[in-house]
Every structure is written in C-alpha cells, then in structure tokens.
Length: 300
Image (cartoon, rainbow, N blue to C red):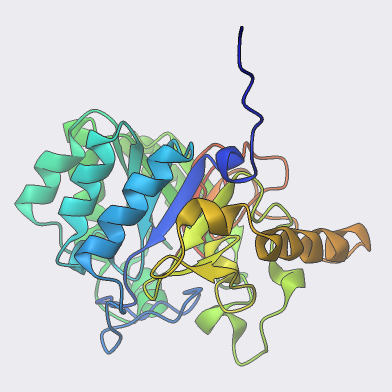
C-alpha cells in the first residue's frame, strides 16, 4: 500500500535567505537593513547556522542565499556555503565585491554556487556616492573577474536618483558579458526608509510564499525586508520546520496579503533584483533584497 504524505507549509518553502551579518565595509544609502562597518555578526553561532542548514534540507528547501551586510566578512561564511553544497542545496552569495578572498573565488567555481552583487553607476563618483566609500573600481574589477571565470552572476541595480546613470551602467555590464541585470527602486526599509517607519505596504506581496529568511539573531521572517516587521520565531530555540509551519507564519503571510488585497503595497522591480520581489516571480527562484537582486530582490 502506498503512503501519501501531505505537504506541510514548511515543505513548501524552497528558498531561504541566510542573513549572516550586519557588518559591511560600505554604508549604502538604500541598504534595507542599515548594515555598516560598526555593525556586528549577531548572536547566531557556527553551530546554529549549520543546524539551520540541516533542518532546511530536511524540510524541502532547495536553495539559499547568503546575504548581509557583507556575508564574506562572517568568519564562518565559507563553512556555511560548503555545508549547504554538501546537502545538495543551490547557494548564491550576495557580495558587494569590494574584497573577495582567494578562497572564495575557488568556492564560487564549484557546481551549485552563484554570485550576485549591486552596481549603481558606470560613473565611479556616482557609484561611490551611493556606497559611501570609493568602492567602484574594486567592485567593477571583481565583476570582470567573475565573468572571466565563468561564475554564474547576476547584478541588481537600484535607482536612488532620477538622473542616475542606470541605463549607461546596464549597457556597460551587458558589454562585459553580464546577462542577468535587474533594476529596482529604493525600498522603504533600513537606510532606504530615510527616517520613515517601515510598513508592510513597502513589501512586494509574495513574502513568505515559498521563501523565508533567517536573521543574524536567529529570527525568522517571511523575507529579509520584513525582519523588523514580522518576526515569527527564532531558530535558536525552535526547529525551522516548526516555525515555517506555525500559525505565526500563516498570520504574517495573511497580514501581507490583506494589504495588497486592498490595493496597497509595492509591486517590485522590473524583472529581477536585491531589493525587489516581483509579484509574478517564481518563488523558488533566488530572491534578493533591498537592493540587489535576483528573480526577486533584496540587498544593499
């Protein structure tokens, strides 16, 4: 006799953001979680992150994105990526590409790995104004290196000003061989909120559907943008599957849907991005935040 196992809400989650750290060399103006040099890696230990990965694989997660802050600054980030690969998960690292240690280049060339970054302008001074540091030359050089090495790469662009050289930068990247480029606008979270109180209406509307995020303190939320709005549990004291299938997560999803059902909310970027989540996107595709991007998008 064949036993049919009913799918649970936890098993429907195919993508997980691992928001490793708030520490970053940059201080980008649209950063959705206000990362910067003075921030920390949070309270999650190495063992916590590895346990989350094991639990994620057990409950059907197929891919993860390591994000921050700058995830490569976290002392256990390569170990986390390696564990995810060993579990058969796809892994995307969302890096500012200011400094990429040699060991990361080797890891990025492994099967199952991919890379994402943010790029703001082909004009160095304009890009540097957004990041708060003279970062343009290093980021562009590492974009070129990733293309040369054949590493799967996508780039999220956030338009922070009307006169920003977004189209010129997009042409520049395409000429370099970058095929996955998305453009988004500033999302009202973190520094991108510019002093305003974050609201559910600033989300894309698909948060928590096929995806979830784990923050540097262990807090789980429907997406990286919603971490300060809709925490639904903590993996440091509760199994991931329990949280993903909990009434709290169901209520968080419902509260988001109710805003959009009334005509509120933000629809997302033009096609993919770290900062946008297009309502029509595949929930199993990588999602990026605040400002970078992917098939959905968040980042900084």
